[in-house]
Image 1 (cartoon, helix red, strand yellow):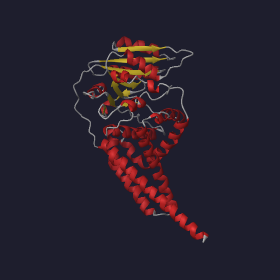
Image 2 (image 1 turned 90 degrees about the horizontal axis):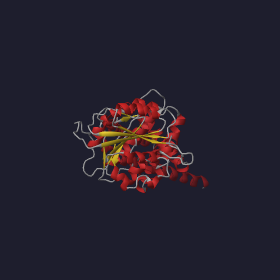
Image 3 (image 1 turned 180 degrees about the vertical axis):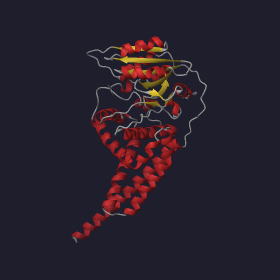
Image 4 (image 1 turned 30 degrees about the horizontal axis):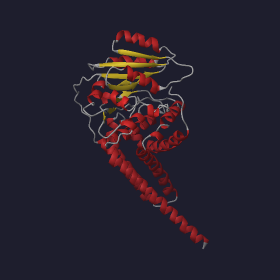
Length: 380
């Protein structure tokens, strides 16, 4: 009798796990078909627009002398007819001051705001950006980082053109440069997946974040929302939290033409990458509840999908059906993602998809837990 009940219990557990596996599959299909497919069908306009609204490019830099030397002149040489570049030299202890003075002699449309460090009061990136926004003379603001370089000289032109009537936020894309470092493929994949999520959500009228390496919004929106006041106590979030709190279905646009990509170098060691991701993940808990639920549901069901698939194989519970489900999802991903990967200059990563998708959902859950319990105290 004892063995009978044990067998019944095991059968119920297996049935429950298999049903949960199929539910996770259905949820993942929903994200693919209702969200990510939107980006796959989106086509950027190849025609170079004619636009001349005044733009202020804002860059916050702390100890970025080398990157300023390499990247800032290219930004100052953009073909756009009416713009300024505001660089906030945020408590730098390297040669950033001298580098900026030298570049300023050549480019009159470069404005430098200098912040000196106070021993008692430590300031972060949000304070620096706020000073830069106040110093900017134009209504329309375009943000990037000192370690970023636009793909072409048409970056400002195409981003500015998205400021059509009613649009106050423009979300761009910032991929990592391809290298031979062993971490590079997965870091690029993770950035790609993040881009797919936030760009697709914006196209669906539910923008929840942006990337500060390539982001634009209006000064009136910034001051109307009292800047970063709602989350000034958090080190990160100058980009995604601001967008999360201020984006609507009608005031946000995206720009993913290859001309507008802002390339930067990925971290090359596990330690530096871990610190970066820990800092970024810590702000997710401050998103709107609806966005937190949506992102958490994707992360948890994506992770459980693979865990339950392995259990189906281990316990030999409908293994052929389970394999068929996984293969079907993978084929659907390849159909949708192949177009998206090409759009976002990551076509070489398609072949990594089966492995990296597992790693990605594991990463989301691990760093999601870490971000819940830990907080960072510095941005550089």
